[in-house]
Length: 187
Image (cartoon, rainbow, N blue to C red; front, side):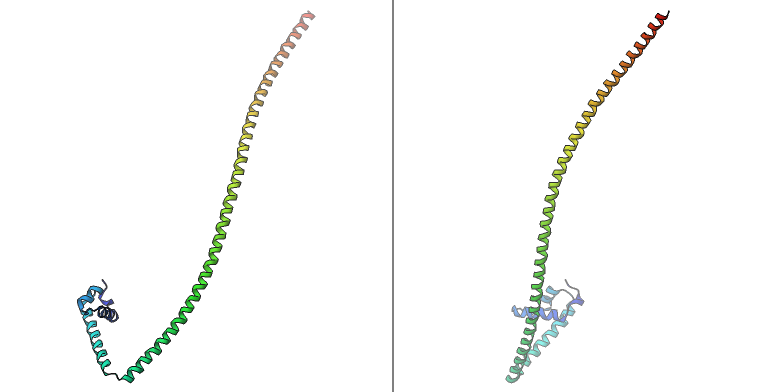
């Protein structure tokens, strides 16, 4: 429900006209059911509306045919002026809409181009990733082979070092024998 200070004469008058057009008789309770607010404010606005309706009906009975015709002509003139302004405003809004549609089309085209380039970039990145994964797999394989060769070479080096030690021992033994024979001969 609305606050009582927001209940305006225009709101009450509008609801009264809607009720009259629907064949209902306006009342404070019916208006309150639609708008809420204070009964006293609604009563005041309803009384004002009723007074204006009574004045309008009495004026309708008192208007001359010539004045009525002049009044209707003036309303027709004002209506045409409002229609002209409305058409002009509508044409302006349609022009703005057409411009907005054109701008939107341009942005949609740019978006489509960006999406296409994005997908191309993703596909290119996937292809590059596959190439790099293959190179990595090959490098891992090469590293494993190099490690195996290193182990094989280390075994050969260890074997050669062992043979070298054995040869040195045999050389020392041979030198010792030679020295011993040299001493035996000199004796």
